[in-house]
Length: 151
Image (cartoon, rainbow, N blue to C red; front, side, top):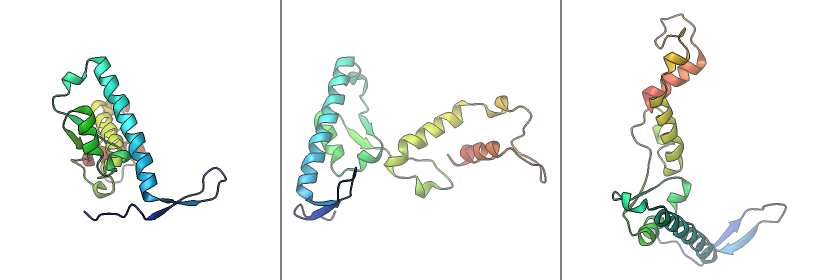
């Protein structure tokens, strides 16, 4: 992995009418790491308090865009005292390369869950999944069929 210089300046875009500005990468890294550590420690505290942490023998799975932070898996392992992996959507067809990043894992997982748990034919009994040629199909059913096939 290419080592990035902590002395490099990064432009922070304008927010709430403030002008954009340049900050040192090391300053940004220090702030993001501190907040990430704080969040993970809070999660660990809540897991301990709930008594559910002992059920996580398989470890912790990180999802979402934050799981792309370099070293977050190591930080999470340190804080939780458990193995940690970063989730990536799997078993996808169609646009899989576009949604194969951890930032989409939660959304893809929820869509897959819904697709597997709803019997669409009971929701639309007059529609058929496999329409014969020339027959118009409900656009929702087309989308649902695509999701069942590709997710």
